Image 1: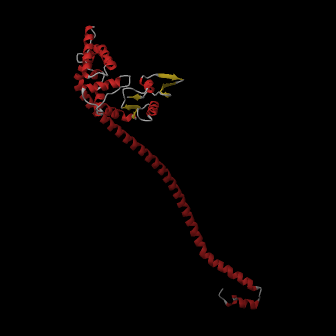
Image 2: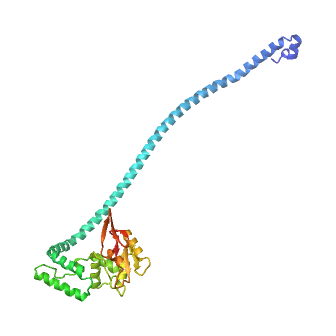
Image 3: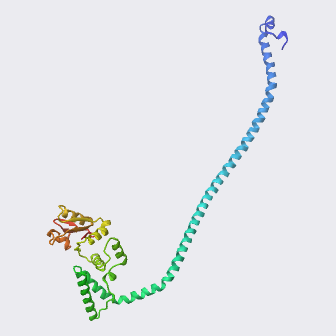
Amino acid sequence: MTNDMFKNENIRKTSVALLGVATYIRAVVEYYKQNKIIKPLLAQAAAAQQEYDTAMESLNKKKEELRIINEKLAKLTSHLDRVRKDKQDLEEKVNDTDVKLTRAKKLIEGLGGEKVRFAKESQRFENELKYVVGNVLISAGVVAYMGPFLHKYRAKTTQTWLDMCKKHKIQVSEDYALAKFVGSPIDIQTWRLQQLPSDGFSIDNAVIVKTSDRWPLFVDPQKQANNWIRNMERANGLIITRLSDPDCIRTIRGAITEGRPVLLENLEETVDPVLENVLLKRLTREGNVTVVHLGEPVEWNETSVST
């Protein structure tokens, strides 16, 4: 192909038609040369492609195996979390049970020492049961009638009733006291914290106030009862008013409807007649509603308290 006879200018001199043939021959020769180079490369590419396909097939298998392993790992991890939570719950229950057992043991040990006291208290209650009728009779009389009287006259009258009970063979406790039989030690302690004087007369008065179904009237020059009522009923929304206040009646009406306690201060010897129905609890029914007439019908709330 390097011969001068294959040069285009020489071929054109010989024959123009041979120029195309020469070009074709050169192309065939060039194709042969390039094919000798490319064919091994194609064989190598085919081999590489086969290796690649084999590797990808193996990779896909490994990926599938990895996916299966990850799924198993996720399930095992979830199971492990549940087991750990169950373990924690069980440990908490065990600790709680241990605490309860310890407390129960201490309680049993403590109650073991109380057995004798409980037996004595049970015997005392059994002995006092036979005095219930007489104690209730005396207590009812004190609550109903003795509120207005001073301590000396109240004690004298109570003693007279005790003697009458003995005369009629009605058993009454030898150490009878209104606060002891009707009052509660817890309530009495609470009243003291609410600034109730600690003398027996004041405590008896407080028991009468809390037991009686009638509104109490306090003769209270030193404001001791006033302070006690204020402290005791403050949490219940106590309303404080006086008859001299322009809106006194309206205030009492609102308190009755809302069921809030009322402290009516500085009462004179006479009370406004409009309050008579409230003081005497003259309640009437209007339809399905209980009302009290305080100048006009006012719905009665059972929790209403007036003092």
